[in-house]
Length: 486
Image (cartoon, rainbow, N blue to C red):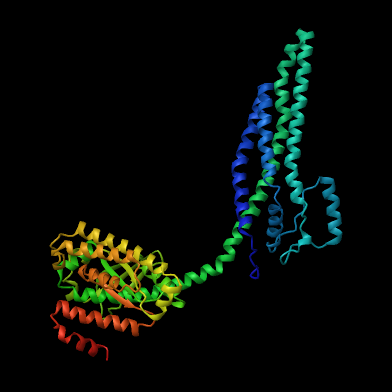
């Protein structure tokens, strides 16, 4: 039924359902094993072994019966039956003569055919006492086994006394006693196992139903979260593809970068300026997950066969491959490994520092744990990338790596600033950006709308690069910055 609504079960009931299933899985094989030992003792005509086997069987069966005393099993069976659309109306098994009489009555009430449910049944259509009968049958079957064993042992004692008085008749009786014990106990033990199997089947179905309700209730939310994650990922992927293509085009003549690209992979650093207050906290959570999902993306560079250079995306959520097309002349500049289709890995990292007035509120009255955790986790990812680079690349591969201690110092400084938990610590942004540039990475800067905070950060970074790498005189720094911000 499309109108089915999941049933809420409390955490206590869910835990109880797991406990019942655990007891079933533990006790059922033990009871079956002790029942077989009981029959084995009977076939060997061993009174002491028979007593011990019966004792163990009784203890485990009593634990088994006690495990189903909880009202949860009974109510869950009713709920399970109620939730089944279109099931035939089943009634408990009855002797043949009673069934025939019931069949005549049913034929009078429903002369055409056996009635099937066309909708979810009402509670009145379910025999709530049926479970009690099925459950009680286990105890009754055990009592029958106990009574039979007692009877056999009593008979054995009386036979022993008779044998003392009449030794000539003892040998004849012993020949038949072992077989008699087994033959008399066997049908009772089989009945006990059958009753136990019926209880186990119903209990497993009902407890599985309870556990599935928790999943069913959360399914709509899971679908919404999956959709939300896909939306965020699509936007993050679009930015990554643009950044990769631009970096590839500008680095075609840099053999060190190309070697790094296919040997280690590309570092992609995201600079976030979101606050951890109100709706921006949710944006930051989305952004952290979306950027983390970019680890599943790999790039492949192919030669374009037409004038259409649009990237080709293949794969599924678990793994994406982006095929970037290059004109023949540009494709020839690539190393042989990339030409042969080697997949290029991405290493996305995110560092966030809230800098607006809302972050002031978050730091004074709210919580900045989210930002701290994101920065700490991504610092570890950045260290892993640096470690891979130092292991796989020669020290003199890139000009930036002529002084290895410089990068080590920057990483240590970044670590200290993240641990310091200083308010609006923009030093984290500067250090992360510097490390990324030295590692030949791609950088992205973003905030809520990519207007005020992003533009201020990007223009300041541009002027800093002009000053540090292109000899912009300090006297013209402010003028250049003002010019960029107009």
